[in-house]
Length: 168
Length: 177
Image 1 (cartoon, rainbow over the protein chains, first blue to last red):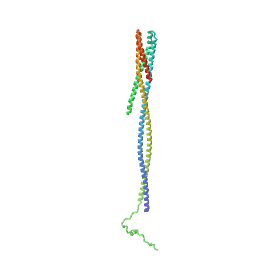
Image 2: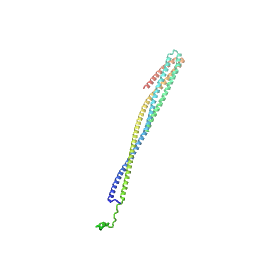
Image 3: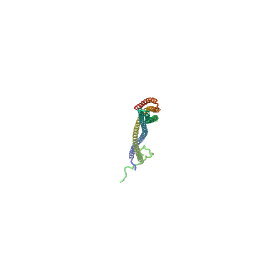
Image 4: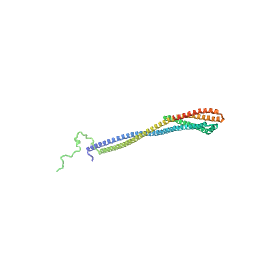
């Protein structure tokens, strides 16, 4: 049994309209979805770029922090060097004073001598201390000269390292 | 009573006989078959399938875009944080370099002062050594009974003491710079 021709034509028309509408909506969703995927790909590229920037910055941060610590250590070393040098320099007048004191002791004794024997006794008693004080003074000056050389070499090495760091 | 109808039975070919324009040899049009609605339904099903695919792709695109946006936000936040850390590290480096420069300047001043000190100290040690030698000579002169020479050495000793004292004062003056 077949439907009347008019009914069939109406059904066919409605099916056509419905199918077209559904297909149109489907196409809209499809286009929007594809656009979303394309935009997601672009966004993911941007995210990768940002992540690469973050990784590079983190790497640079590590290197910069290490360099800062090294420079801080160098500053501490140079600072300690200056302090040590100043401390050693302060020891020099003490030995010079010891020489002066020993000489004055001998000189006072000799000035008070009333005979050659007492004069010789002053020498026997105090000349050894004076010689020891002069020897200690000489040794102190040598130690200070060595410390000075070491400090100068350290400073020179520090200055020599700066151009290399600047070039790096 | 006759059941004869006053009208004759309808002739199925009457229309053809009465319509002079119709081709008597044309094939009669077949009635629309049931396949047309079936095709329409199949088309509708295809459209629905297309709709479903579109919705699925749309959902996939939306989800993917949302996920990528979230990843981008995270990556940008990480990059901003890392760059802030880098800026702090660079500032720390600049401070350390300033400290180093100051320490180097201070050390250079200290080295210069110490160098001057060592120069004066060398002269002082030499002067003290000469004093010691003069005293030994004076002792030898006294031992030999040569008091005139002992007195002459005393004059030299006094001069050397003055020189030594001047160097001693210079040593302290250098230290107090």
